[in-house]
Length: 231
Image 1 (cartoon, rainbow, N blue to C red):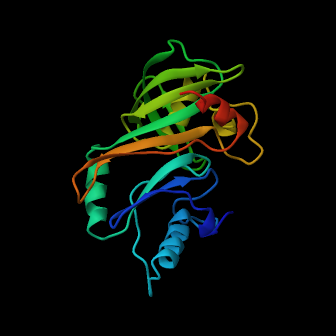
Image 2 (image 1 turned 120 degrees about the vertical axis):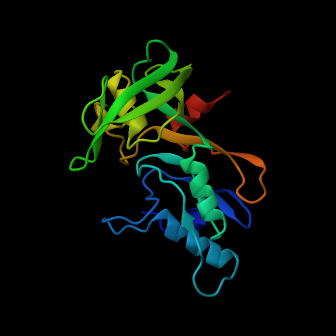
């Protein structure tokens, strides 16, 4: 894994926040694999950049699935973290994703409502049309941005943030994300990532109280570049 802070793509930084464009394959927080998580790489970057002695404070506000790329925000102060946590808990933030899918959804723009049930053992969420025991309601809005020869670029606004929600819901309507073997795409991408990108995050700054939007460029592969062209 890339544990080098030189490779870090910083989108925005001030005294309270740092926003990173996460590469697919990077972990946001440490897990059982023992791979260096993004949170540690960001800490190393801050320590180096600001010549900080001792430990660097960094609060993890939200996560992105490991095979997904895009915007991740961290708190740099213990003042900002609880405010950001509250903002996310109260859904006062807006997250927009881009996904490259097989099969254009019908209709091309719409809202999906499913009941998602998580299977811990498989680390997978199943989408059901109707409520089932221990399921949680998942709502997302999608629109078709561009059709390429074999794939369609969708823009997705999440209303709820469930485990693997976008991946599971798109798979349930027969439009799996490119490379997402777990959710019904026929083959994986060479590097294990999937074509799902957290494109932007909008929120009110926890300290300055200004509305801010952070937008991340898509990964540097031919399909993403073709999809994002002239949009």
